[in-house]
Amino acid sequence: MPVRKPVPLSTSRARQIWLHAQRLDVPSPFGDGAPAALAAIEHLGYVQIDTINVIERCHHHILFTRIPGYRRAHLQRAQTVDKTVFEYWTHALAYVPVRDFRFFVPEMQRHRKEPHRWFARNGEMEYRRVLRLIRDQGPLSIRDIDDDVLVEKDHPWASRKPSKAALQLGFYNGVLTIGERSGMLKTYELTTRHYGWDKLPRPATKKQVLSYMLDRALRAQGIVSLDSIQHTHARFRPELKALIEARVKQKTLLPVVLEGAGKLAHWAKPEAMDVAAEPEHELVHILSPFDPLIIQRKRLSLFFGYDHLFEAYVPKNKRKLGYFALPVLVGDEIVAALDLKTDRAAGKLLIRSWTWVGSGNAAAHQAAIEEELGRFERFQLAE
Image (cartoon, rainbow, N blue to C red; front, side, top):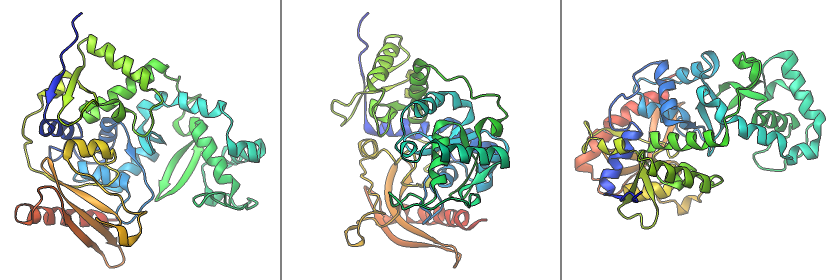
């Protein structure tokens, strides 16, 4: 069988394909109301959770970017009432559709089998005590457990309560799930009881997990590389490469030579190449630094020619864009980075710095960005 010839692709065309896959090229791609939040998470595959609250936390921000009428209560309903999304680790803690739960069960099983340093240090007794409390009393948060014998922290982000580590262990093992979240306060419940299951879903096979990872990336990215499929780690890299090569032979994937990518190989579905050459609207999006379009910095630089700097942990005198700069996407270009802070007490959104990047210029874009800032401020301050 002849080897399929790679398709050459300009970065401008690649941007359009990726923006379409991210659903950032149309005004309201998922509709409105609570069902839209689930539709967005199902399409993207997962939505990252983060603790920083300078402006709205990133999981709400990411959904607001794609759902004009989004409200925080929509995600709360999906997690706690409808029980259609759950929290688990992807490349970071994230909201994931419950329909995909079985693809995470093998990882949960791996956590159960492998020795855990906390478990080895504290023993089985504390873990079982916390599980018994939840089994007998119902869902509990760390604040509800007040009989801990406090210990010294072994990490700046750790807790003096041993029960916190026990809750986390149960979470990663799949025995516990986060049934509700209020800000960053998590309420844990037995996974099976929360979802009304007799037992966890049957675990996906390794082959099924690989297909899931590849299909999730193709759906949300349009054009993929091995790096983009497995962001931050390469545990399944050889197996994913073999799966991609098999699909290329089956003609369900095209090899792509992306302008400026050098030897970094990319692939896309044939139908992904049919995206309209120009977006229907030149939309303005103020993006979270944890948005799926932004979080993979090398990919962002390759596709958009923009190197985003996340400077929350950089000394103030060394920052270039600001503490919590948000990239601004206009059409298919990133034209600015805004360092914003929501002053909830004063009821306004503060612009701490405004940096034009790329081909961004005030005459062409400032009015449209300021209009979007008004909408963003109303979302930030809404209850």
